Image 1 (tube, rainbow, N blue to C red):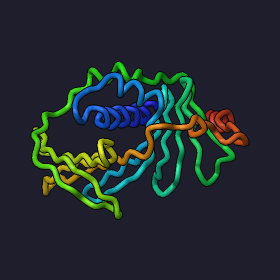
Image 2 (image 1 turned 30 degrees about the vertical axis):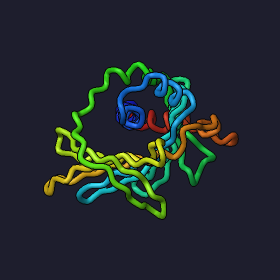
Image 3 (image 1 turned 120 degrees about the horizontal axis):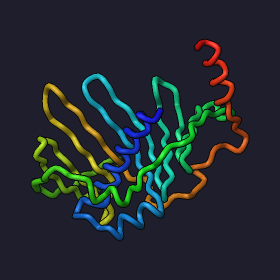
Image 4 (image 1 turned 180 degrees about the vertical axis):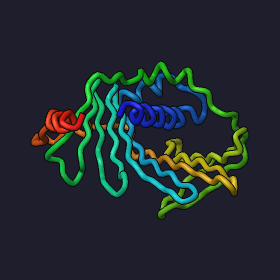
Length: 204
Protein backbone atom coordinates (compact mmCIF):
# COMPACT_ATOMS: atom_id res chain seq x y z
CA UNK A 1 0.00 0.00 0.00
CA UNK A 2 2.88 2.37 0.71
CA UNK A 3 4.03 2.35 -2.92
CA UNK A 4 0.47 3.01 -4.07
CA UNK A 5 0.16 5.90 -1.62
CA UNK A 6 3.42 7.45 -2.74
CA UNK A 7 2.15 7.55 -6.34
CA UNK A 8 -1.14 9.14 -5.28
CA UNK A 9 0.58 11.72 -3.09
CA UNK A 10 2.96 12.63 -5.89
CA UNK A 11 0.00 13.14 -8.21
CA UNK A 12 -1.70 15.44 -5.70
CA UNK A 13 1.51 17.40 -5.21
CA UNK A 14 2.05 17.94 -8.94
CA UNK A 15 -1.53 18.88 -9.74
CA UNK A 16 -1.83 21.13 -6.71
CA UNK A 17 1.38 22.81 -7.72
CA UNK A 18 0.06 23.40 -11.23
CA UNK A 19 -2.98 25.12 -9.74
CA UNK A 20 -0.86 27.69 -7.91
CA UNK A 21 2.06 27.86 -10.32
CA UNK A 22 0.22 28.50 -13.58
CA UNK A 23 1.42 32.10 -13.45
CA UNK A 24 4.51 31.53 -11.30
CA UNK A 25 5.02 30.24 -7.77
CA UNK A 26 3.09 32.13 -5.12
CA UNK A 27 4.16 30.82 -1.72
CA UNK A 28 1.50 32.67 0.26
CA UNK A 29 -1.24 31.48 -2.08
CA UNK A 30 0.08 27.93 -1.95
CA UNK A 31 0.25 27.94 1.84
CA UNK A 32 -3.29 29.26 2.18
CA UNK A 33 -4.64 26.79 -0.37
CA UNK A 34 -3.08 23.83 1.40
CA UNK A 35 -4.44 25.00 4.75
CA UNK A 36 -7.98 25.72 3.49
CA UNK A 37 -8.02 22.58 1.37
CA UNK A 38 -8.46 21.71 -2.28
CA UNK A 39 -10.52 19.06 -4.04
CA UNK A 40 -9.96 17.97 -7.62
CA UNK A 41 -11.55 15.54 -10.04
CA UNK A 42 -8.78 13.82 -11.98
CA UNK A 43 -9.56 12.16 -15.31
CA UNK A 44 -6.89 10.27 -17.23
CA UNK A 45 -7.21 8.51 -20.55
CA UNK A 46 -5.03 6.87 -23.14
CA UNK A 47 -5.00 4.03 -25.60
CA UNK A 48 -7.32 1.41 -24.13
CA UNK A 49 -7.74 2.87 -20.65
CA UNK A 50 -9.45 5.61 -18.72
CA UNK A 51 -9.93 6.42 -15.05
CA UNK A 52 -11.52 9.03 -12.84
CA UNK A 53 -10.93 9.88 -9.21
CA UNK A 54 -11.65 12.69 -6.77
CA UNK A 55 -8.80 13.84 -4.55
CA UNK A 56 -8.99 15.96 -1.40
CA UNK A 57 -6.14 17.59 0.50
CA UNK A 58 -6.15 19.87 3.55
CA UNK A 59 -3.46 20.76 6.07
CA UNK A 60 -1.68 17.39 6.08
CA UNK A 61 -4.78 15.23 5.48
CA UNK A 62 -5.58 13.49 2.20
CA UNK A 63 -8.51 11.49 0.84
CA UNK A 64 -9.30 9.93 -2.51
CA UNK A 65 -12.40 8.37 -4.03
CA UNK A 66 -11.82 6.15 -7.05
CA UNK A 67 -13.12 3.14 -8.94
CA UNK A 68 -10.71 0.19 -9.18
CA UNK A 69 -11.78 -2.70 -11.39
CA UNK A 70 -15.38 -1.50 -11.03
CA UNK A 71 -15.17 -1.28 -7.23
CA UNK A 72 -15.71 2.16 -5.68
CA UNK A 73 -13.18 2.83 -2.92
CA UNK A 74 -12.31 5.62 -0.53
CA UNK A 75 -8.84 6.11 0.88
CA UNK A 76 -8.17 8.46 3.82
CA UNK A 77 -4.70 9.40 5.08
CA UNK A 78 -4.30 11.39 8.29
CA UNK A 79 -2.20 11.29 11.46
CA UNK A 80 0.29 8.88 9.82
CA UNK A 81 -2.47 6.31 9.22
CA UNK A 82 -4.24 5.19 6.03
CA UNK A 83 -7.82 3.89 6.01
CA UNK A 84 -9.48 2.11 3.10
CA UNK A 85 -13.11 1.07 2.65
CA UNK A 86 -15.72 0.34 -0.01
CA UNK A 87 -18.11 3.21 -0.66
CA UNK A 88 -21.00 0.77 -1.08
CA UNK A 89 -20.02 -1.18 2.05
CA UNK A 90 -18.79 1.45 4.53
CA UNK A 91 -19.45 -0.74 7.58
CA UNK A 92 -15.89 -2.15 7.50
CA UNK A 93 -12.45 -0.69 6.86
CA UNK A 94 -8.80 -1.68 6.94
CA UNK A 95 -5.94 0.54 8.07
CA UNK A 96 -2.17 0.83 7.92
CA UNK A 97 -0.23 2.82 10.47
CA UNK A 98 3.22 4.36 10.36
CA UNK A 99 2.88 6.39 7.17
CA UNK A 100 4.67 9.69 6.70
CA UNK A 101 2.83 12.26 4.61
CA UNK A 102 5.14 14.78 2.91
CA UNK A 103 5.32 18.45 3.79
CA UNK A 104 3.61 19.63 0.61
CA UNK A 105 4.46 23.30 0.99
CA UNK A 106 8.20 22.73 1.33
CA UNK A 107 8.10 20.25 -1.57
CA UNK A 108 6.66 22.90 -3.90
CA UNK A 109 9.99 24.66 -4.20
CA UNK A 110 11.73 21.44 -5.29
CA UNK A 111 9.39 20.74 -8.18
CA UNK A 112 10.73 21.20 -11.69
CA UNK A 113 8.18 22.02 -14.37
CA UNK A 114 8.80 21.64 -18.10
CA UNK A 115 9.35 24.87 -19.96
CA UNK A 116 6.12 26.20 -21.45
CA UNK A 117 5.79 28.26 -24.61
CA UNK A 118 2.66 30.39 -24.88
CA UNK A 119 0.46 29.49 -27.84
CA UNK A 120 -2.80 31.44 -27.65
CA UNK A 121 -5.73 32.62 -25.55
CA UNK A 122 -9.28 31.82 -26.57
CA UNK A 123 -12.76 31.17 -25.20
CA UNK A 124 -14.26 27.71 -24.88
CA UNK A 125 -17.69 26.61 -23.67
CA UNK A 126 -17.83 23.32 -21.73
CA UNK A 127 -21.17 21.99 -20.43
CA UNK A 128 -22.73 25.42 -20.87
CA UNK A 129 -19.94 27.25 -18.99
CA UNK A 130 -17.68 29.69 -20.88
CA UNK A 131 -14.00 29.75 -19.93
CA UNK A 132 -11.01 31.81 -20.91
CA UNK A 133 -8.34 29.33 -22.00
CA UNK A 134 -4.58 29.91 -22.00
CA UNK A 135 -2.83 27.32 -24.14
CA UNK A 136 0.84 26.38 -23.89
CA UNK A 137 3.21 23.89 -25.51
CA UNK A 138 5.85 22.21 -23.34
CA UNK A 139 9.33 20.96 -24.10
CA UNK A 140 7.89 17.43 -23.62
CA UNK A 141 5.61 17.85 -26.66
CA UNK A 142 2.53 18.24 -24.47
CA UNK A 143 -0.29 20.74 -24.79
CA UNK A 144 -1.37 22.33 -21.49
CA UNK A 145 -4.59 24.32 -21.32
CA UNK A 146 -5.57 26.40 -18.29
CA UNK A 147 -9.31 27.15 -18.04
CA UNK A 148 -10.32 30.27 -16.09
CA UNK A 149 -13.53 31.89 -14.96
CA UNK A 150 -12.41 35.45 -14.32
CA UNK A 151 -9.06 35.10 -12.55
CA UNK A 152 -9.94 31.77 -10.91
CA UNK A 153 -8.32 28.66 -12.34
CA UNK A 154 -10.88 25.88 -12.79
CA UNK A 155 -9.44 23.21 -15.08
CA UNK A 156 -5.95 22.07 -16.09
CA UNK A 157 -5.97 19.91 -19.23
CA UNK A 158 -2.70 18.26 -20.26
CA UNK A 159 -2.44 16.06 -23.34
CA UNK A 160 0.25 14.33 -25.34
CA UNK A 161 -0.92 14.22 -28.94
CA UNK A 162 1.62 11.53 -29.91
CA UNK A 163 -0.27 9.21 -32.30
CA UNK A 164 1.50 6.12 -30.97
CA UNK A 165 1.32 7.03 -27.29
CA UNK A 166 -1.66 9.30 -26.70
CA UNK A 167 -2.42 10.28 -23.12
CA UNK A 168 -4.38 13.04 -21.43
CA UNK A 169 -4.98 14.20 -17.88
CA UNK A 170 -7.66 16.67 -16.83
CA UNK A 171 -7.77 18.16 -13.33
CA UNK A 172 -10.98 19.97 -12.43
CA UNK A 173 -10.70 22.08 -9.30
CA UNK A 174 -13.96 21.47 -7.45
CA UNK A 175 -13.35 23.51 -4.32
CA UNK A 176 -10.61 25.50 -2.60
CA UNK A 177 -12.17 25.20 0.85
CA UNK A 178 -12.88 21.85 2.52
CA UNK A 179 -14.77 20.73 5.60
CA UNK A 180 -12.84 18.27 7.78
CA UNK A 181 -15.70 15.77 7.59
CA UNK A 182 -14.43 14.56 4.21
CA UNK A 183 -11.47 13.00 6.07
CA UNK A 184 -13.59 11.14 8.63
CA UNK A 185 -14.56 7.48 8.55
CA UNK A 186 -18.25 6.64 8.92
CA UNK A 187 -18.85 6.56 12.68
CA UNK A 188 -20.21 3.01 12.47
CA UNK A 189 -17.28 1.58 10.46
CA UNK A 190 -15.50 -1.39 12.05
CA UNK A 191 -11.74 -1.99 11.70
CA UNK A 192 -11.31 -5.52 10.31
CA UNK A 193 -7.52 -5.31 9.85
CA UNK A 194 -6.78 -7.72 12.75
CA UNK A 195 -9.17 -10.29 11.27
CA UNK A 196 -7.56 -10.09 7.83
CA UNK A 197 -4.07 -10.31 9.33
CA UNK A 198 -5.11 -13.39 11.33
CA UNK A 199 -6.47 -15.09 8.19
CA UNK A 200 -3.33 -14.25 6.20
CA UNK A 201 -1.13 -15.66 8.96
CA UNK A 202 -2.98 -18.96 8.70
CA UNK A 203 -1.60 -19.38 5.18
CA UNK A 204 2.00 -18.33 5.95
